[in-house]
Length: 117
Image (cartoon, rainbow, N blue to C red; front, top):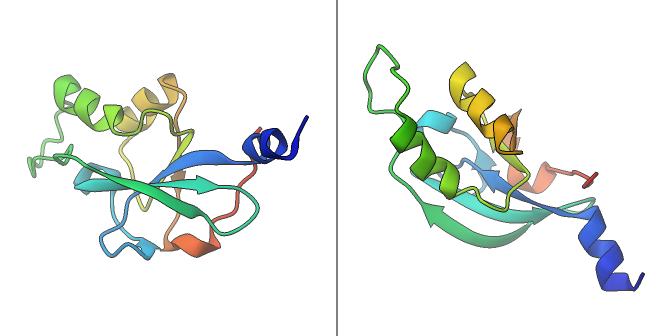
């Protein structure tokens, strides 16, 4: 295994819910974009930004909209985790079915450390 292959095995793509680009600081359902990072044992490296229409419509009944969710989840394709301050049960379950693990976290993006398994 060469050095590049070893690095790829220790890193993963993650989605970040952030309003300021510095901190994980918003609810999954309110996200208007995902910041996509390559993360591992060092500070995450920014790859791209994927803009979306928020899953939440502001309706207090919180009805799950599969079509709306699918559009949001598509923006996370290739990611193994998504970091957010909160997420509803149904969106969490649906992401997990797609192999994306929601991580509840609030704080600086540069503090995130993870190892691909």
